[in-house]
Amino acid sequence: MLNSALTHANFAEIPGLVPRRRSGATQISFSAYSPLRTGDMSLCINKPEDLAVLRKHFDFLKQYRRSSSTVMNSDYILDQTYRFFADGGMKGCQAGRRS
Image (tube, rainbow, N blue to C red; front, side):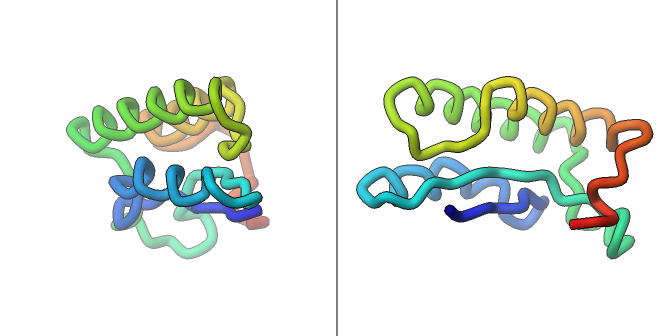
C-alpha cells in the first residue's frame, strides 16, 4: 500500500497517481498534511482556488472507487479530508502530531 500525504506541493498530481496504480496490486490512500508537527504552513492547501481543484480531484477519486479497489479512502474519509483543509484543521484532532 502507498500513502500520499497531500500538500500544496503535490495535491494537483492526484489524478496522475491513481491510474498508475490501477494495473498493479498496489493500493493508494491519501492523507492530509498537517503543520502541527513541522510548523510549515506553506504546505497547507487553503486558497479557495486550490480547494476547488482539491474538491474536483476528490470527486474524481470517489467516482474512480466505484470501478476499482485501488483507492483505499472511503467517500466519507475523502469528505473529512477536504473539510480538514477547508476549515484549517479539525478541532481537537492531534493526529498530525503523531504522524
